[in-house]
Image (cartoon, rainbow, N blue to C red; front, side, top):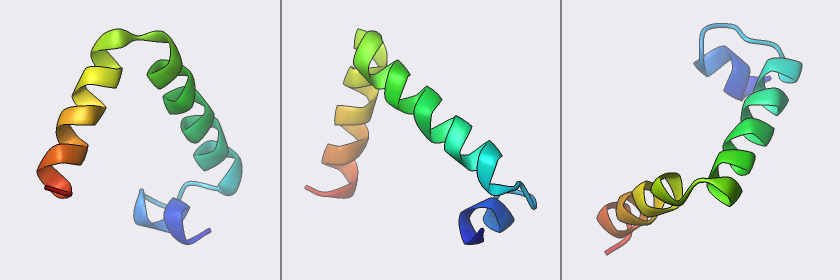
Length: 45
């Protein structure tokens, strides 16, 4: 619920859908994997 509120009062099903979609994108798209890796290195050097 807290995550949904942080993103404009979305309910838990919207948040769950978004998480599953992002996980799918990470598994299936090399450019998303690369971008995520770059973000991780910036945030956790």
